[in-house]
Length: 257
View (cartoon, rainbow, N blue to C red):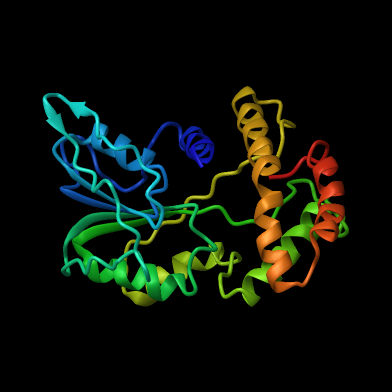
């Protein structure tokens, strides 16, 4: 989780957000949905020491302290209590936040448009921003050499299928901008960043990012696959391991992002 955070931070050239805030014109109150270990929320507090940063998550895995900044403390709502139904269970009033943020949460929601985007519109102040930094799972190949039987592609399609059966769709990345417009957001921007799946790029920065992402995939995807594939596709652990093995080999050799 923390490694994903660092990868996205490198891809975004060290920026925590793309919304047009500065230290002079900072967001007064920020909500980080599914904050995880709280790294983004804590660094936002460092960046904007006069802002109130609220992080919510189902798992209380955040640090028990918030570091001081210039004699002040960034306000992070820790420790966090488990939320039984959704990330808005505290029933925030309308027009409460200047910025609402999500990162790598695709697959967490039964209906991201309804549960997150529409509610964010309700809870943002006029002129506020919703920023969803999400990573769709479908691999792409710049030169068109990815074969249709490529194991990473087959795994992704199986994941998409099982996520639909689980009512936690992961193939929604390209729909986010349309959903934002449909619920009422204006001035919607989409920025697309490439993340190499391994260390194939010649560019030193992208090679480093690709090697980090490769390790992230190899460390986490087998366990991620086990839950989806066993519960919703009826595969045994042995079948999943056999299916996963060629993917582990191919991720070292194909030039994908």
